[in-house]
Image (tube, rainbow, N blue to C red; front, side):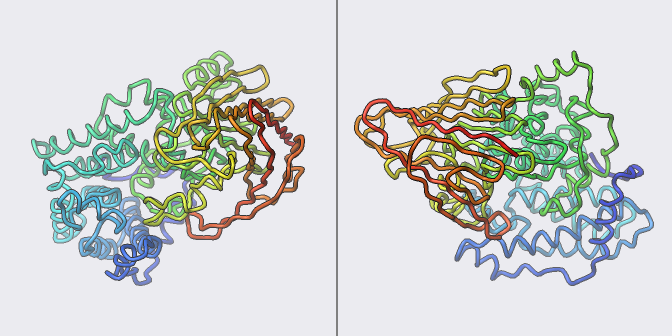
Length: 559
């Protein structure tokens, strides 16, 4: 979509328009991006300081661009200054991604990473929409930088590292670069070559999803990857949008929700419990596929990266839609398409079960994108909060995406409700997997059994099976760990929450079990924004005799 003007905004967008106007009017000096902050990442892995400044710069540019397209009488000088300043930037990408360009034989300036591609999309649609109004020297400089930094690298046959990642990078880099090409390049062989390359990335992105349509990276990264896939495919008129698999992918957030209307979602992997969901994207998906329309319209600040694709499509696409169908037959049809039963969703490829009544559990393997050591991990939610919890993403640093990843609290086994055996926790790697032994929807809940044996490397452990029996009617979960051991082992059950527990449970969740020594540990690490995040680990230790032993725990949601 080449944005030439936005339609008259719906009244429901009033607070978003107010945010845009406030940021556009903020005339404080833009943050500098000094070389020392690039070196800081290389020296000690710190990403936060550089990226905060980078996204503050993008915030004002995005707001000024939106203002100019919403109000034809806008003064374009501040926007021109921001465009000129972005052209002055040495990097459009982030320091954390420069090693990709170097491994490809490219310069830092021609690093086509997520954020360079997003910047290109923003600039391209801005100069296209404001053609004739924007000073020609500014527009020409922007187009020249787009050529040098994005289009020429995209025409270079050397592969990018992200071509083959099979995750959100394929969709974002390919989608944003493709949207930029659609906005400013004339129809012809050069543009077609870029679009073909971007379309190939979209195919690889789709291949990274299983047939269940679930996003292994969680709802936040569904927004990122699937969002850019959809924006590009929509603008290009791609037949990919008609695939049944894409319909299932479009429905992922509503299947991974504890409370869609309240914005509460399952925070597995590096996801969050309350992700940013662009209102424009959800509106267009609801119109096309019959999925849930947006329950709320997020503020401009909800997307801390200030992505033009999300904001512009919300301004262009959002409109109030009627509530989902209440016809029983239609509801059954939708449930069949989405793979839900009695409100519970089962993702056979991901190895997830999610019941909005308050329970979720996961299998998978320990080399997933944004992986956590969390096979057999589960969540329990009361009426007001997630009691047995998942901390989601920690602070992104060089180590967080390197060999020392699991020294960070959030992705480690320490932050998940998974057993420790003889002091050993789960190990990383594709072969460290959870095999689904059984799944069944019962009249009042879910049965879900996982073989976790491969996740551990413990002498004497022959087999570890975790069995979940969830009864939503009684609001109870019976958890049984069945251990087959060749010698006596020590089993420590770990239950993680942000609420401090006692041996008898947590606020709103009662715990019953037979025997075992209970202790509580406190673990703290920086969250995704760099703020302290504390997990309380209830540890219950019992011996597991040689042979087969069963270790049962009953959780009852009482509040």
